[in-house]
Length: 198
Ligand code: ZN
Image (cartoon, rainbow, N blue to C red; front, side, top):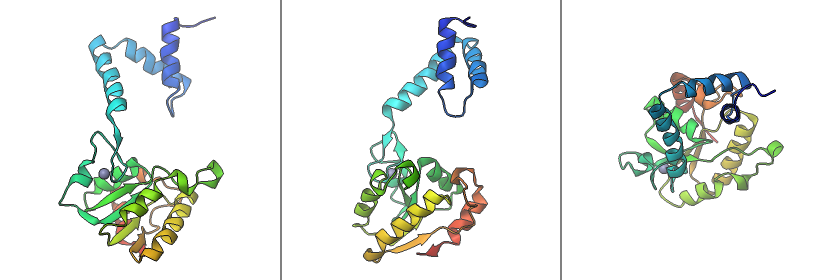
């Protein structure tokens, strides 16, 4: 027996396909949506479509942006000779939130994970090495303290060594297995200040 109409089921299934949303939450969200003013729902749907159609990767640091070059890379007041390597745009946002980091970023788009079949060629390492051709004084590796993050940090360290460019790793004040985006700003700043040379 179908509990709801076909359209209602379709909406519930759409919500249930999102990460972290179970059947119960999906039902709650679907009921919420059909009880909202039509105009509000249209704005919500438009925001999703617009974001999906216009957001791309920055040509320099590969963060998500709606411009060719993201605002951080385009900012001439930032220190372009210091590059912080992070796994995702969300990790980058965590460091940006501290408001204390003045360099630029390089977003890998993941981490090396032999278990999940993600190799060095699957993240933006080639692009990082290319950026080192420019005037770079320091590369700060701020990948997560997970097994994948540490593996990636070690790999990058070895990759950069021959270039003679200073390469540092953020302090392990960041709890092991911790996702950067959930760590408070004070801890992040401490990890950044306490970075050690690789
Ligand atoms: Zn950028």
